[in-house]
Length: 81
Image (cartoon, rainbow, N blue to C red):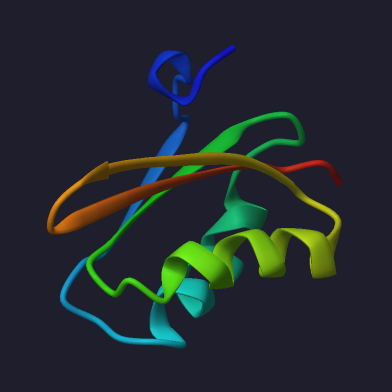
């Protein structure tokens, strides 16, 4: 599976915001989807490239990767619990 073939179950738009807002938005929205579902985070702050994988490691959710279409970064995370 590549990131380009991931189907997201929920898209969270955090474009135009800065750290830590994109991560706060994913933390608020991930509980709204079922375990095994994928959340897609849209962000324009480059810090998300380090923040999203780190947040997934810290919370135990699966980081699936990024698609980069400047100026938008599309990050994918699967809810694991």
